[in-house]
Image (cartoon, rainbow, N blue to C red; front, side, top):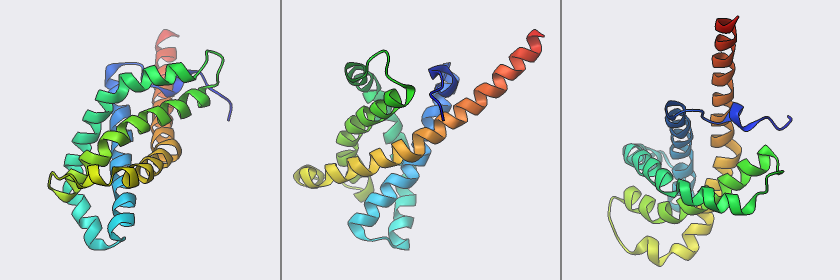
Length: 169
């Protein structure tokens, strides 16, 4: 697959941005906590059903943290990429910077939401929990959530552009 222009894979307006973020967030919230919870407590039906109960709260928290960390992640990405770098390089580094910042917050907040209690446990175990959580989150984001969301955007833009071309003809 060749490197396509940025505008075909990324949101072009606020409505598309919301859809893009929601696609990524829904995929992430349905995979990352399951993997982390399974590694922490074991992969059981009880663990999974317990996670299902808190997923709406996790979804809101993830979207809020994504919005809070977006600008710092963009600044960090801009420091690492160069104008001639490929689309893939930009996307991988942006995913890495975003996941790095989001996972710092969600390692603590996600634990609080998952256990339904605010405690110092995630802070006490941060050095152990965060590398694993960040790795899982990065793999899900880089290999599943973001490529899927970009594909959704690309197909949406193909339809929109085709309609615009027909209307102009």
